[in-house]
Length: 425
Image (cartoon, rainbow, N blue to C red):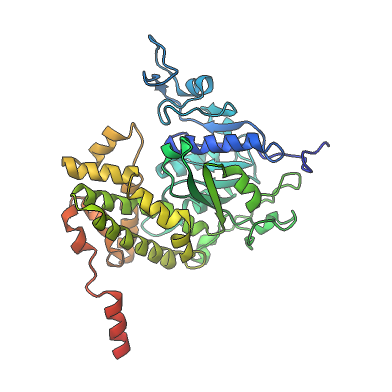
């Protein structure tokens, strides 16, 4: 069999999701598959939830007298997602596909980029339809929360599909990334030990020692009994070096890590904090107030990771990586959760109303994450341990007002006072 750079096979990539961020990531991936033909098949399938759209007059592809068309047809003909990423030229090797099953056929790398509310249903549809040795990367800004437990979406995807799944998150406003304005991101991928039939992964600082679909379990019962199927020898290794080649662009710099928990939590919980930042900015309280909210938010992110993912979460991820402090700054300055919360206060509207008016059919992630996280914390009796997360939930529910945030997040005893008391005991 002829080989390509020493490999008999190349990785086929599929992007599951085609919203604002999904289309931006798909653009990056398609550019990189074309640039690395020895590692990846050129064409990238992007699953698109089919809908009828009108090409807007602002688009260079607008023609007078045009009628509604299928979104997939528009993307494949004009290489523009006119509804969710208007004005951006998409690579010609990015193929919009209305069939979920067909889009993932024979794909060895699956990139998940959907609103987190749709992940469970999507995974149900995918079960048994993907390569058993496929590997995933979750770009989802949320956590999978029930009353009884909290899981990363990389865990949920891995468990439902029987695959290993990493995560991508960073200080990334989709439109800026798509417009090729320079930014950074963090990709967490811990190569499963079962894939180690390849030479030791070059550029990967460690390899997962488990054969389970996900790492970093908070309890043995969550580990499950799913065994991973090894990546066949004919494929290029999915190590840090090659995963970076899938996502890194001159305008989109990638830092690799093995901390899937930290990257996932950074992407999820900062949306809750961004709502609080929007509330105080809407009140006209300025940058000092936003900085205070961000400080407490980072503190609660770290506390959440340490408490619920003690075996895998790395505090340094929140302070050193794009998915941590950097993403917090971006999200609390110009992200959609921040903007909608700010407008809701300024105009006296519910955040649901603002969402409908501002987001062109897309959904905020912070509001649903705030509710889900609070349900979990309340069941654990831990609402008071996360005062900012709890405050945002109560404001969304109408139980508290944005003006009360300073008092709601004020601890009766700060850390210094507690340390002094301990020293005197």
